[in-house]
Image (cartoon, rainbow, N blue to C red; front, side, top):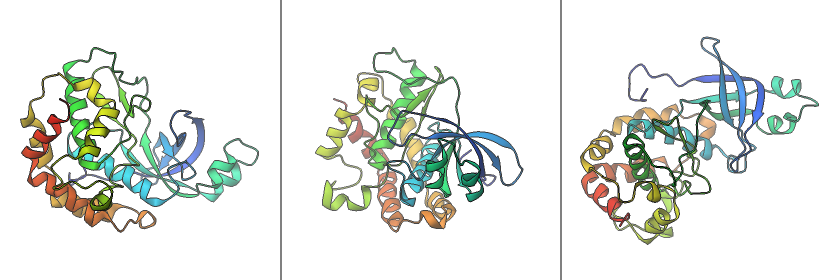
Length: 273
């Protein structure tokens, strides 16, 4: 469900038990049995603990959550995001467990996402279905909008049920936007610069979608569906301990792209040539 849906509720969960460590990725997320604080429902959640390599500050968790919300707004599939509280009681119950140290360093609020089972990683050697290609094109545009460099042949950060592609891992999205004027300026947010071209060339998505039919109109529609109302709802929902002072600059950058969506999609497509 999109965050702009009036019925949307951000799941707030309590971690009950760590089950398994996923060894891939810098952050080594943990599969945890959790309980919904509102209704008590038990659910297995992939939790990116605060002790992860890139998850040590609230900004990373906020970027994950906002990235999931924005992706859904653009009709990109992502596992349902949530906030997972790791309690001191859980930490004390794990004395002698291999999870003890990681849980101790992660007491408080952590980003979580619903565990998706029986998924595979898309590969540039695969012959993708048309539905896969459309999903990959959406994710490609999302990454250029959010200045997200973290989807590469080594670290795909996508999952597939062999029908559709899901985007995951957005802790690096948005983080460079407030500093674009210094680091790698775009004259306008909807135009690409050499750093964007390098990011496309080094990423996984170019090899998946280059030379494939790319009809811009549906993607322009996806982008223009993002409104100021999205930001008005999203930013206040972020936990206070995940506060980041640069969200106004991020929203301004994204909304400049929304206002020039046709030019943005055209310029993004040119990087595939």
